[in-house]
Length: 369
Image (cartoon, rainbow, N blue to C red; front, side, top):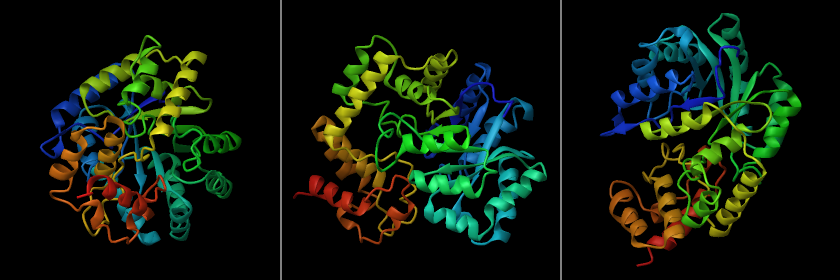
């Protein structure tokens, strides 16, 4: 971990897009700006952007810079293996796609009670540790979406885990469904450094409703995203905070305030707590738009987009959300009322949302006629 330069990383789940593909020229420019400002940590996974993230990083990063100039993290994801013998070939394919000989960090992806059972059954942790012994992985860790008790079980059974990637932001800090604070406390007890994902909660904390934004504007400096990222980075034991930057403006803003990092002061902490209260009062759906729920949907429902329409309607109360619901997101895919209640989405959801029930609420809001 000694090669990590700063505590801010480039999350590559939401890269710049153009005409349905990764915008390679813009991503190259963003990589250049990121590295030139002294940052060097990049995070990807095979399934990100419909398997486009890894090859985009090869084109924009690994083929353009010496290997010692960047830290690259990849992940082992459950849908890509069914038995122990599947893991090594998949891992080797990831190295080839990324154009590298080793990964600095390799994470057991999206660990939960159910996923952990599969990873144990297939000896995934043992395989990763063997790959580390061979020099193909520098550090083995996990990314995690479940209750704190499950995290404690994993770290107790596998003390060899070196780092934990957690969803941590000021809205989820005390949320009983996510247990951010409790999971962070488990990591502290086990002495594991934390990599933060979703510090802006899928962009929800960057694009605030006006009444919440005004609270932060009153502080007299910084964007909503800056307060969210600084909140996450300000806790003890944080190795890295990831941001899924999708354009050059986001990149330039984020590296600007993270070059000389300063944690939130007491006045700022009180302001973000006030913003939490505003969010809770609106009854919004806490979806992060990771899109894990959409792959297995038999009705091709664009669940995160429908949830975003619902949240937008709650905040702005205008025609815009109705237009996007009826004329954009349900034209090529199913409506909320088309849900057949199979439950595949809920099994995939790292936020443990009751998606079937929530789709009923969305249908009630947008399909009244």
